Amino acid sequence: MIKNDLFLKALRGETVERPPVWMMRQAGRYLPEFMEIKAKYDFFTRCQTPELASEITVQPIRRFGMDAAILFSDILVVPQAMNIDVEMKAGVGPWLPEPIRSRKDLDRVIVPEIDDTLGYVMDAIKMTREKLNNEIPLIGFAGSPWTILCYCVEGQGSKNFAKAKELCFTEPGVAHELLQRITDTTIAYLKEKVAAGVDAVQIFDSWGGMLSPTDYQEFSWQYIQQIIDALKEKVPVIAFGKGCWFALDTMAKSGAAALGVDWTCSPKNARYLSGGNITLQGNFDPSRLLSPPEEIKRMVREMIDAFGKDRYIVNLGHGILPNVPVRNAAAFVEAVKEYDQG
Ligand code: CP3
Image (cartoon, rainbow, N blue to C red; front, side, top):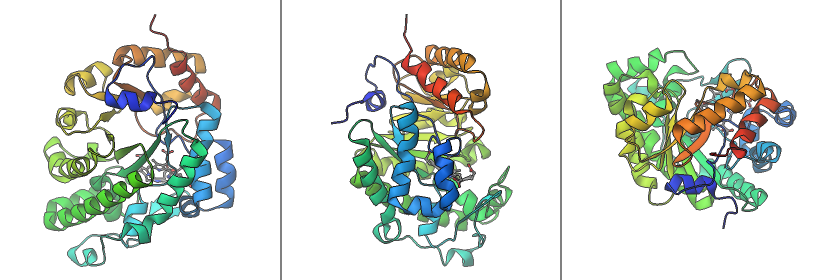
């Protein structure tokens, strides 16, 4: 049994003494101990070496004591396993030298055997669980098929993912075939993660908000729904769509245990749009972690008051930024632990 089960209780909608807290991208570049490992090993070596991935996963927990850990890895290990090369270039970020832009390009995209290609993730999960010693739950994750497609087609990050949208709107058949292969791979991958020991999974749809509400249903949501349907009986699923407030009503009826919200949607509006019964997660503006610690604490208290302490998981509205001072990240977690309704 997990000793601190606040996070799992919140996912089940149970009453809690205070809401649980974790931070998206908590295992990463704002931590000096992470930078030490980063200086020695390149990105995918860190992902592929269970000793390193598990160590990086527990670093923020040791320092701040969040209520859940998220496995150190990346959403782009999935296209890698599908035979699409992915590199991590300094100063550029993800770099896919041979993007998928036509039916011919699709020929080399496979739905892989998970054990053969991503077995190292399962080893990292098992090693992380040992290190966590049943203190807190472990979250596994995957990118949404649409967000993965964005990188596969664009070949790198982008402000508006124009090439990804161009493929969807000029060659919808190719786009849908690619989305379905990513979906099938992701379902098999997440099932393996659950078997290896993760307690919950989160789907990151970081670029869902690039699509209109109608296109979102066609090119993103229907695939996320397939993933939720395949996983929801096994494990709680959190669906996070950045900029996707317009879909909160659909998402609330999906079988997901919780929905992620970004900071452009107020807590009140998020509760209203999602129907008031589902657990919500978010939505502190990551840049607000640059405010002085006392101000961070006040804003966190106000955020909890606005969402309500139950059916709520305290988090950021997107990943933590690299320039956040460690003591500011600490203030965020402390404010939640000190939270008192009175
Ligand atoms: O949350 C965690 O702490 C677990 C680890 C994690 C990473 N990436 C490690 C990482 C998670 C959950 C991700 C998810 C991810 N990766 C997303 C979805 C969430 C989001 O932020 O929108 C996306 C879009 C990616 C793709 C990706 N990987 C980008 C855009 C970048 C480069 C930009 C950046 O943030 O640095 C990466 C690299 C990456 N993934 C780093 C880390 C810690 C930084 C590079 C490094 O450590 O060398």
